Image (cartoon, rainbow, N blue to C red):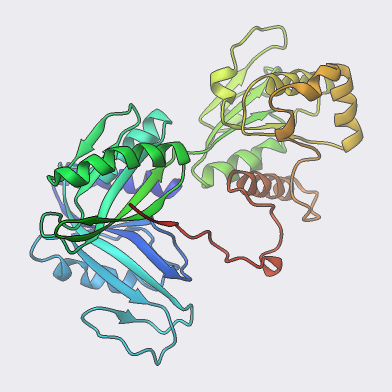
Length: 382
C-alpha cells in the first residue's frame, strides 16, 4: 500500500511538470515470481523509477528499454523468463534472465502523459481516498482485431462503470464479470471466445489501505504505529488518558483520539473491517475497548497480555461476550511466537499476525509450507 502512495505522488509530479512516463504493470505470472499481477512501476522521462515489478532483477532492464519499446505510443507486453541460464528463448518474444526461479512474468508497458491520468491510476487514487474497493479489467492478449491490448473496463468505488473499449459483445460479458469479481473480492484471469478470436483479461480487485486501530497510547504502541505506517496502513490511536493521547507522541499516526471511557463515541465506522489492537496496560480501559470491539465488526481483534488476564476480562464483560459477532476474530495472546519481548519485537510479532490474518495465512514458517509461497491468480473461461 505504501507503494501505491508513492506511485500517486509520482503521478502528481508528472502532472505538475507535464512529463511523460511509462507505466509497467505485471499482468500475468506463470510459475514462480517475486511479484504478483497488479504490481506496478512508473518510469518517468526524467528521474528515477517508482515502484517494483520484481525482486530487483527486472527493473534495470525495463528502465533502460521501456521508452524504445513504447516509442510508437502503443502498449506492448514484455515477457521475462526467470528460468535456468541455458533456457533458449527468442529475444524478440522472451528475455531469459537465468535466475533459476522457473517463472515467466508478463509486463504491460504503456505511455502516460502528465495531466492525463490513466484509468488504473485514477482508480487507485479513488480507492485510496474513499477506502472503498474497485475492480479493473485489462485486456492483456487478443487475437480478435476488434479488441486492443490494454483496453479496459472498471467499476469504481461508487459503483460507476468505466469503459475504454468498443466491442459490445465483450462489454456485456465484462459488466457481469466485473460485478462477480467485486463480490468474490479477489483477482482473476479470464479468457473469452469472440467471433474474431480469443481475448484474455486480467481482473484486478483493488483494495484500500489496511486500517489499524490501536487502543492504548503507551510507549510500546509507538513502534507498532511506526511499523504499520511503513507498510502504508492507516493508523488511529485511541486512549482515555489525555497525557498519552497526543499527536506529538505518534507523529506517524493518521489520527490520535482522546476518548474518555464515559464518552458515547460512535466507533462503528472506525472499527468496521479494521484490525483492532488493545494494549493500554490499564485493566479498565482494556475491558472497555475490548467490549466495544466485540460488539462491532472489525476484521481482527488482538488483546495484549496473558491468556488468564483476557479470560478474566471476558468474564467481567459477561458470558454474552462470547456470543458477540466479532468474538471468533479475537486473538489472545495476540502476535506470532517469535520469542522477543522488547516493544519493537512485540510490534513485529503483532503486525505479522495481523498481516497473516488479512491474507488468510496461519503465520507459520515458509519452509514448512507445502503449497507455493504465493497464491496463484485463478484462470477462468467465459
